[in-house]
Image 1 (cartoon, helix red, strand yellow):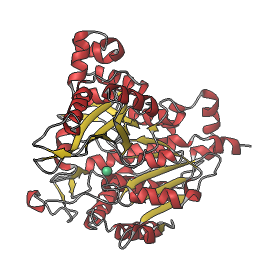
Image 2: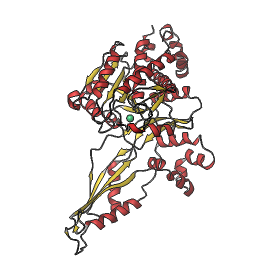
Image 3: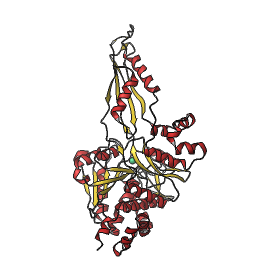
Image 4: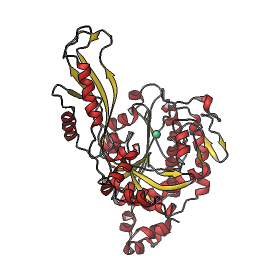
Length: 479
Ligand SMILES: [Zn+2]
């Protein structure tokens, strides 16, 4: 399996070198045994309740350290003082030749809380039933973290030669404030400085009624650009209106913002994403998805593309006014009124240019805009690196004939922190989960992952990690 994979990916000259004895000895992995072991490990992992709050990730970090110690891999429990009682990050590394930079497999150990009354299995029982492992985190994202762990272990056991170090990182607190990844990145620049690529959650694959419509590799995230908009007036009594009431002024500004049709554009990643979707459609829809930029210039194509909130959010910057504050008394005109705007910008958007446009549309020179929270670094990974193609090739081999899509997410994860530290971040899906099943389970009830999916995840990760190595190291060692 592994050898045939290499003959697919390397040019003829390298294949000759690879068929030399050193490469021919590359061991293959026993995926059936690994899959069953993965299911057992996942049950154990789920039994450690890391509902956040409070998190309790120190317990999972200790467990990970113990599991890896049995394999002769030394892990480190980190950042306990910074993260507070019962919390930790975890880190381990398998050394390669060091001829290329490292790859990190990253997951979060915390899970969202459960409403037990809606579950048909104990959410922290790690039950295996009907071919599934049940429990909170099975999909988001303990199952993914265990597939990464077993890939890491399998590569160590089999002695598969690495040119890139393989790094395993488990973070606390992704589900609330991202404290874990931030502490890890701030405090351990030495541990991340030679990591080039990071693989984590949210690939964006689409499975409907058991049919895989596309396999997704996530390459970007919209930028969170929350703003507080304030207008000032003059406080007075509500019984004697004046033109200086800031409340109607704010209402007029918000109406202008709500009417603003922000410009649409098709980024390269979204273009590829829509093109992959086009393959599963027919007629007009197929045409519009295959050429979204062209379709946006036609009334029908534009209306259809923007009619779906997901597609609309991928084609433009969006603004949702949410929190409003005016007076807290019926008879009092307040000195100021404010609104909070949930703004999400396209991954490559120029934030200063957008801010100028936003102020222009408010058409009110008295407006002040201030950022809510910090501006996170942008996540916009290149589409055409050799390593991105390694993911595409592996998925293509496991899912022949299924379109490969580069996806962009409208929500936020921990990735901006890692991207800010210079890592190229890709989201991949180790599981092919029906959209309905995902909706029910992720942050919901009866979360579970099939054992078959654990097997798929292992093949995907083991394939990707090995393809991402390249074999320059082994080739150079040939006499
Ligand atoms: Zn998650």
